Length: 428
Ligand SMILES: *Cc1c(COP(=O)(O)O)cnc(C)c1O
Image (cartoon, rainbow, N blue to C red; front, side):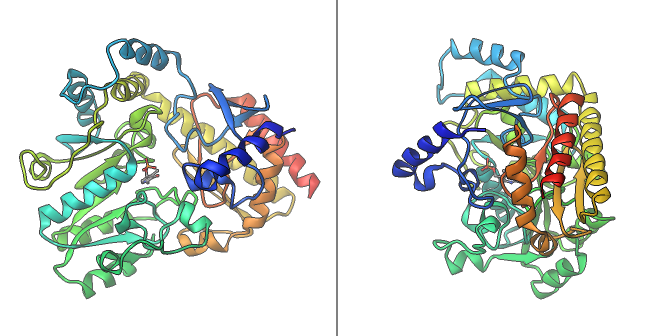
């Protein structure tokens, strides 16, 4: 496969954009090599600037659950554009999407739209702090909640990829209020509560972790977190930016049958447009301005075109609830068969799969927290990544990332992926 145009576009981009990218993971720093510049996408496939096509296992990091360029979404957005791009006023569409989301997701009465998952999580902890009149939050090592200061305290994903646990520019004053615990380790959370009695506003976590690779919650971890929050009058925040409208229509709350106090969204709710949101029961949401005193705002929040893309995507999901089961099955088959292929060849690995999210960790038999994920053989993953890329399969460019399966991934794509994985084994 030739990457001639991608190579020259990357060179040019680096002159004008830091690292040549607008989000670090895209630069392929973890896997090495030249990032592929994509020109278009349709269904399960991406096409790059050199005309190569790839089966897409990233799907824009989750949003494209229906596959790329779904015709109903394209039609709806095209129609919406005729009315204008942004008004900075309320629109009927905002109420429509708010109704659709609050009726689909358990335990929420009201929702506020923002423009990214980062904004959603940043605003959710401000709201939790305002509501509880407490300052500290607990987050888990390896969970990612966007790039706002409070969360860049040894976060996962891009930051982990760069081996840069704390970002310069985050002040000690901010870091003081973010307490870290270990994912899937309830004792680590208990001990944080014990040392900070009466000071914890909230626990925030990815109910299925996806930013240190896919790591599902073990046993009754989520339930115990909920109990700890109740015992300490702290709020439980589910960051459902990845899992919302993916694990189930009602997200991880529905999937695990556990209710959170505040839920954040992103990715799928925008249907590929830049949208985030946070939601909770009325008692909590009414703390937000203009009704309450917790300030939060956005010039382009609730943008009509973004809302139409999100509304249409969510409506398609709602009218075809079997999709969640379908893509979970696809993901299960892919992960089980991949595991069998590698094990047959005597290659040790762990494949975590939960709903339509999965990750492959080489050289390790179990991965249940960030430490485990960092012990995996990332060199091996990088080789696997490049082999598949050269064979028309686009995996996330880091062993710390999650594969997102779309509804357009069918038997033919799975078979090709399994076949190329066998060829990879023969090549090493
Ligand atoms: C992607 C992601 C975010 C950040 O969303 P952005 O839209 O990139 O700001 C936050 N939390 C989780 C769990 C995510 O996966």
